[in-house]
Length: 119
Image (cartoon, rainbow, N blue to C red):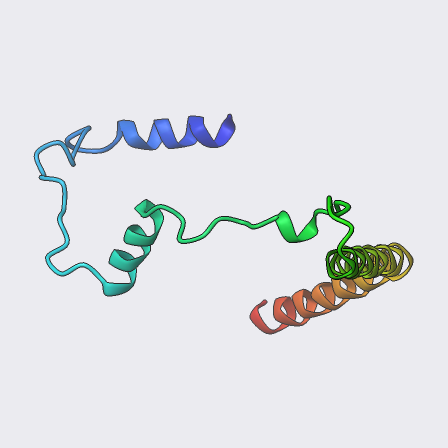
């Protein structure tokens, strides 16, 4: 609130008060190719949607051995994926906070060095 108050007080000193009112909205003569591409991608429909069917584990409706082997392979793949996720979460729980504290300490040291050099 204090910052907003200071801004409003400073804006009262502007001559004229709304000095941008008479100016047209700026246009960019040659848009950046990167910006143009970004807007095209943003407005375009997704090229492909997420296919979750490969993650579903459903028993086959037939008694065909090949179908059952495929279902078993999908189930084993899902089990391995979930096991890897659990291991990653356990590692993050065990070591993540220490890593973050180390990173924060490094940033603090850098900040102190920069303060000494600039101050």
